[in-house]
Image (cartoon, rainbow, N blue to C red; front, side, top):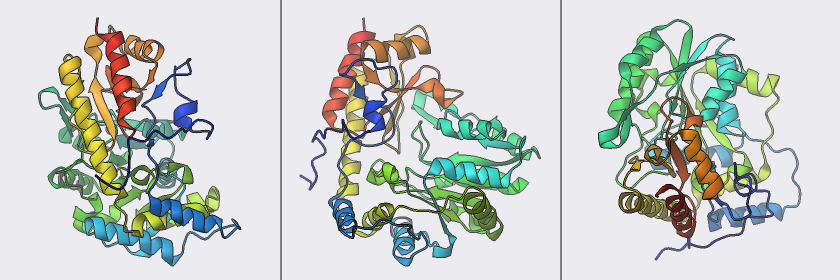
Length: 394
């Protein structure tokens, strides 16, 4: 038995938690939130201790991001986990990965330029591009139903990156919501196509530390060779260590031109420069403490994924779950249980009173799917899936 008890139910009501207080489509007080991507687990003891110590300093004024403790902790984590040597001067701040890729697209493109995304994919990619009047260029993933997984359409990607108006692409690695952890071979193919046309890659690697046992994650920059300067990597401790509310992400940008453009947009134009002192304390603790929390939480998530796979196989055999390799987001095709995606979503929310994410929000290829967050006590999943079966299986 590990140090942490992830079966513990922690009451988040009254803490203004979006996951619990803004459940989409749930009108009752007994809804089960298995939607937005944060965990219902306590943070590690190391993080809690660091926050208490920082609070005891009693002053929370303007705080410098560019400090040795933080940047050495971030770069040290990349080195320890992935053998990735990152210079501290190549690490930049943003309060989140979502604003980070939006700032980068604003800095590197003009209105009307195209940016490639790979749906079904994290919906803020599309929303951010549309809001800033960039063209969303879809390179849809290929769904291999027989293998219960997705692959990249390289021929289509080559065609899209060849177009002059398309300036680059946003890669999701590990992919949200389909759960792929792209292999080195797959990533090398993407890099080769980008290099062929001289296009940049923004790689969202926020879920990098939540990986199924036996799966290997490699940051794309570590295998890019002489093309690494054209890759901008977005990372954060928020998903892995359950601290999204502290608003901390760390960008790795090695090309000086891109560094200057990012800082001009983020710092000079948008004045995004202040970092929370609590975010610094928590990040340093997460990345430097000798604490088993992350290993244990990955084991627990693995077990929750296995439970979901077994449940659907036995109790809802018409469901088609995906073999997710990373993230704590379970992706399942439930289209056989309803006449339409809209009807499926309505039944799950209104009748089962379970908040999931409707697959259509992730774009092309999401029709009929639901995304289920399994980073929660097992009891939530047991009850949620029981309710879903009761209303869908007639």
